[in-house]
Amino acid sequence: MQILLTGGAGYIGSHTIIELDKAGHSVVVVDNLSNSCEESVRRVSEIIGKPIPFIKADVRDAAAMDSIFKSYKIGAVIHFAGLKAVGESVAKPLEYYENNLNATFVLVNAMRNNGVKNIIFSSSATVYGNPAVIPITESCPKGECTNPYGKTKSMLEEVLSDVQKADPEWNVVLLRYFNPIGAHQSGRIGENPNGIPNNLMPYITQVAVGRRPELGVFGNDYDTPDGTGVRDYIHVCDLAAGHVSALQAIERKCGLAIYNLGTGHGYSVLDVVKAFEKVNGVKVPYSIKPRRAGDIATCYCNPAKAKAELGWEAKFGIEEMCRDSWNWQKNNPKGYEG
Ligand code: NAD
Ligand code: WQD
Image (tube, rainbow, N blue to C red; front, side, top):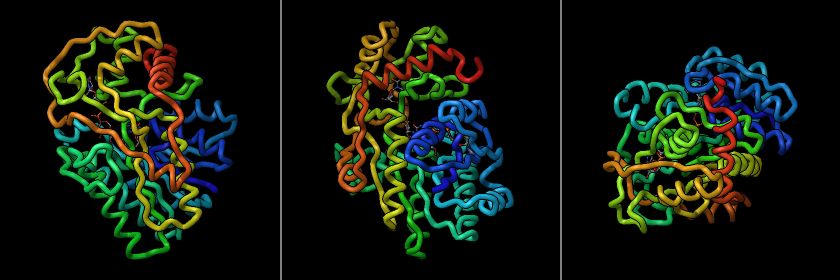
């Protein structure tokens, strides 16, 4: 099948192209490069040994999207495109609502006009808010999101569910990602944040490579085994493979389906720091800082539904995640810039 990846030049999208190619799918990528660069697509093209059709366009551009659906025989869309920085979304709510919601409205309308009714949406564990149960299953009620970014994910889940309800020909898969880290084993592609990283792993790798003096650990007084926050880190290549499995669900006409994509294991901030130091033989100096606003103590999933229904489960452990994150960073100390 030919798959359109919106936001396919980004961190998760670029890795997903490789898994789709392995499974025999072809891709088309549309991205406005607001948080990525075309170099990632060029490198993926080298890795898979094939050209990748790339359209630099904004998903909010209805004419551009219509023209993509008219030019290619798209069977399904994986919708990665969106702004994703939690802190920035608090400072710039309008930009986040405008981009994430409008891009999805324009996309789904263009899909409907062109008879393409299969979509996989990048949702997030953030929709559970402060989760009512741990480990989190898909039947856990959605919670109060503390930031506009998370609210866009929660709202878009509702929008896409309603679209499917109104027209059962639609197949909509909502994938709730936990915490993706790691990079492709080639070390050629990986996470490339702009400015100061918000997320833990890119911060750790930038400390390890000498770009930042030390990691700040946001709080050691949570109700967790060592007091630091616990998360479900998942290797980005496992996450990417989850999209291929979700496409199989679409081919089986799944209607509306929701899956957690995580490993089911929780690691604390200090667990990750220790694993990173041990596997890679590098020091990560850190100091304890106050809690970060909006953070929760513990978040990890029960991934049994994806295993039972999609036959998907994560293969890589925390050591491989740490090894591959470092392999990418040390080979590309300035990301795609050098
Ligand atoms: P990313 O920023 O690397 O990729 C998103 C891509 O979308 C970027 O290349 C950006 O240029 C593009 N984009 C943004 N707005 C666009 C628009 N209007 N038109 C065209 N392109 C646009 O992020 P990622 O980590 O690869 O995340 C992919 C998706 O998964 C996002 O929707 C994100 O919210 C979601 N997600 C990410 C995480 C995570 O921790 N990385 C966790 C849960 C969910
Ligand atoms: C992980 C842990 C921090 C940085 C975010 C989004 C979520 C999803 C994934 C998109 C926490 C601690 C972090 C640092 C630290 N994204 N930390 N020092 O907050 O679980 O999830 O990314 O959907 O929506 O909220 O990930 O990597 O920022 O933090 O101590 O410099 O590391 O407090 O316990 P988080 P994270």
